[in-house]
Amino acid sequence: EVERARVISALLDAGTKVKLAGIKWDKFVQKNNNPNLNYLGRGVYGADYVKAIQQAQMAWGAVSKWVPELHTTRTFEIPACGTALVTERNKETSSFFNEEDVIFYDSETELVKRVGFFMNNKKALLDVTQKGYERVCKGGYDYRTILERIIEQILR
Image (cartoon, rainbow, N blue to C red; front, side, top):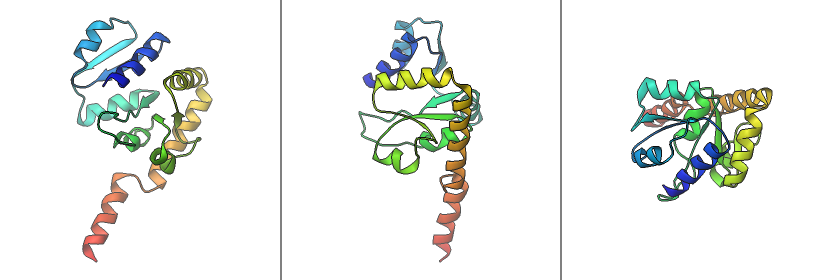
């Protein structure tokens, strides 16, 4: 999506190291020969997906503009992996998390600024990471809790 490419370009232009994976990114990667861009290929799955998220200090929970969505499974997977979630502030993400749990942004400019702030403030980043993890696990957004609720409803 054009919007996603713009955001990644802005992060790269600001000197942020970006790991990227997914289909249809080949042209972007060829066009953006940047030492801060690490292309992991057309997809990262299973345990490799979890590892990739866990190795990051923060991860972008991008939402689609093409298929209108306000959150994705990544919205919960990223903090559940013990990584700070960077996400667009909207009515759904704001209903799941507060300012202490995730790194919210309202614009591309704010996203770049907030990522830079947290990269330079490791204590603040660790606090957000821990609170996001706790929110997902204690808030009932983890897969185990969701599955337990489903099974409980089936058995009723």
